[in-house]
Image (cartoon, rainbow, N blue to C red; front, side, top):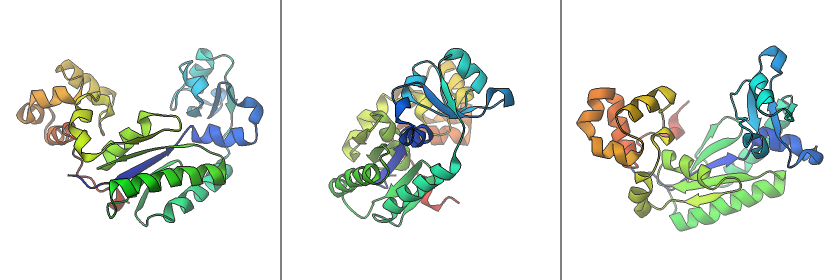
Length: 238
């Protein structure tokens, strides 16, 4: 079910990026924002330099420091993050009333009332406005539905902009790893790999009846996603 164009905007390393605005000397260094290791804290956001050392969100801060001994671990400053998020969402509201926020640092925007070409121009304008007003960088993906838009926003990070036109969906989806599909976590991924499904193309070859046999109703969802279809309306979720 094509709903697009749908734009997904995802701020790059949002918490860390906010912190670096007032700490320019830390730019280019392994930086993370998270809880203290002595309090069993976890990492919320890591810079790309820290990610190269194996530090990522949801990782224990203690393990993060073991993997990256020179990691600069900063405490959260949610007042600053929320202020920046408010500015970003005000920019979104200037372009469409249909916005579905996902936390402070990402959102879906519905541009189904205009063409892909027009939406591309608006998306680039949004990225520019965000940077001009906050000095923060956003990645964006434009696609026919929310699931593909989210994948597109991650495709050319950081500071990326990737457009997936409706006629490009079939070939694009064929190559996607199953882990990129909504609802596929470690456990489901392991089950799919055990069944010989590494990509969405593999899911198609397994067939609908096979997927429903092994995954029940979610097998139907996997089948739809493997063809690039997403029937969810993220704009009505509470």
